[in-house]
Length: 363
Image 1 (cartoon, rainbow, N blue to C red):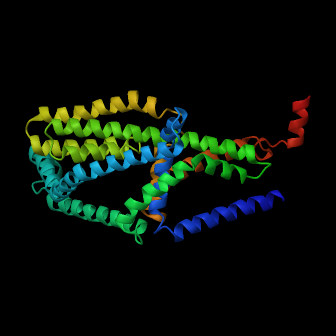
Image 2: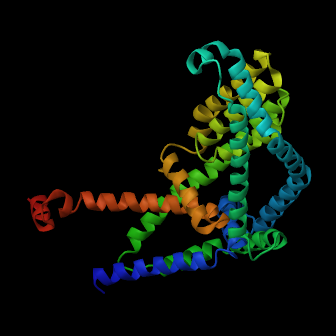
Image 3: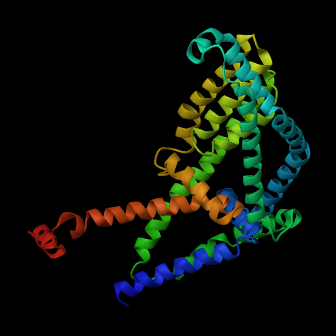
């Protein structure tokens, strides 16, 4: 088979895969979620196998523990978060108006010097802007949900996902060996090397960053709640969860927390600086302790590229796209770096034919 036919075959296969994912995106959520869960938990099951526990028993133990923890979190935390989220969304326009009033009242003299005696009434426009933003965010989330779970119920998601994860975890080594046996013989070593690079990048980011997010969720929620901040649990957990994209979570959480603190504790600036100090400590803890030890610097996923991938795949595939964004971004990054290495070693870049390069190497 010529190179052109090989390239055409793989491009055609990729297009068929993308088209299949797009057509079936409404029913793929529990299966993609099960695959992601199996990939995340596979090292733990493998470790249990190394200490002598049969893989089936280890899989049952790990999946059972995950289900118990998930049920406990659903019963204990989800209702509380739901109440806080509802109250926070209802009070957010008022918070923004109060912040705007504090800013204009204390700086009325220089604002009048700039705008004249009649200051622009921005409180109404700001409130309307926040209300519209909340409506847009709600519509965006609703679109994600409808795009990802239009043909399945919430009950089926909770039932199918652990079942899929169990069977994938149980048969993981056999599945990987079977996939390896399907690879083209001449390119097998190159493909396996690329797959190892993708796995290293993906494992380092997904498992490492998930551990970082969990630690930050615990730290921020406990610290902000202990400081007496309104909606401290909601803001803390959201900050840690959004930290999956580096810098996005901490910046978003800090803006929300400091804004709520100013409205809540005004004019007590001490409490505002305490809230700000919590985020300074959290950033130091994340940058110098958690990230170097749990994620590392060789992941190869730039925050801007990751953010773009999340939005792009969410727009294409809904909620399923959010689950596919990180592995696809890691795979595309590895393949792009491989293509660049090939280009830099090719005559297209060097301007020297391969035969001349080989001859000079022998000389």
